[in-house]
Image (cartoon, rainbow over all chains, first blue to last red; front, side):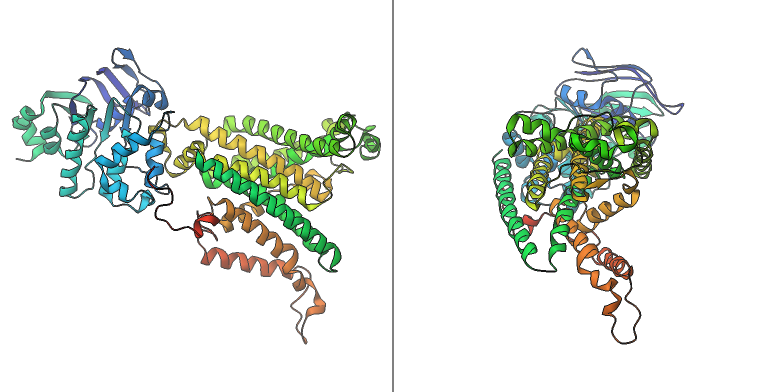
Length: 232
Length: 368
């Protein structure tokens, strides 16, 4: 279980995250939703170790991982799928996947097979440079690459960004499938409807604070959430 | 792992083949008049190909825009010269400094132990390794502060380092070691072309193996997207330093070979222009292509030193034309470089390697 306690993050004196606490229980899909600038990405980047927190604690299965370097955090079993996909454009699909498992020393064959089973499209494109893939395929690759580190928790930063509705649906199906196979998912999304529909638990983040929490389906029916994020 | 073995075998095969070719070329250059320049060009181009590949590791594969090459070469060249001047000749070389402080010579030391034929070779190779190690040490030292910088700022800082080294080494206080601003000469060198080919070949093979390893993949990931690479658990500082130090090592070895080729060393010669020349080879050959860098080095040196020579000779002017004169060669050369850059935006090879051109894309390695 990932436990965030009173996490504070500042960028050059401006407090982007003002003391948030939430939990990601094992085996669940948890989503943070909120408007632009609410601090969602900052939270994920802090958990991944890319940004140092100004205060608070991050615990993974009872162990304090606050302020560890990104490579330590990946080896503890938390991987980030960064916003905007960020695949390595000049590397082939297969090389991208191998980079995802960079810290592992054991054989990758079964994992590559697993990722190719999840995303048959990637297998077809195995030798293609990642930069030549379509947006949806790049997102699949970004997810597959993160899975190659065999994470306990996969964190996804806006996986639906800039993708066609049908592709977004496919991505969310994959998220559910990955979760069914035992990977815990922490998801942040602007597409609040899809995210809450998929998630077991949702948190609503507003200007650096958590204002609402509850099971995803319940939040979908919440009047405030509807007004602010679902546009009805 | 099988792939690495195959690369080693192919590489060793290529080195063996090139060694035979270079022996043949040397015999040809010796017997046909007018071809003696070919031998010099081949030697120089061989040395430059190592320098270009080592620069490509940094600029092309790791995406670190560094212009410190001449500085590391300088360290290598001086180290080589200082370690291999025969003791008897030191008084003459260091004439203003009582024969200098170093009173041994690696080739001589090794010939004392291993005999007169094997000893000097082992000594020279050992000296080259010291060149690399010292350049790598300087790389590590410089890397500590400057690798925090990115792109142009890194280029400026490393360029500054090279300029500082050039002045530093001529400092009077070090003169008993470096001979101040006087030349170092009369040191032991490879007499033939093939030892250059073997040494450079082995160095480049090592670099190829590095680039194809998982470290090489991490370097390329850093080049493509630093943030994503960091998120995948690649320690940026560690890997950048590794690439920088390794590149410096081979630049140092290249500097030592350069000293052999020129047979005298003076710090004044290691200017920024030398770095730019190598950068030009990397760019023309293709950023991120090892075979491209090698090809470009040979074409570059061949063009600038040999094939365009006739343009400098005013005797070749036809009729009343006064165009051909000493220096005109470089004008034509610059135009050729511009044309290449215009028509091959990504260099001759792009980011492909020579064997890729003969291979079909599909099923290269299956889906292991």
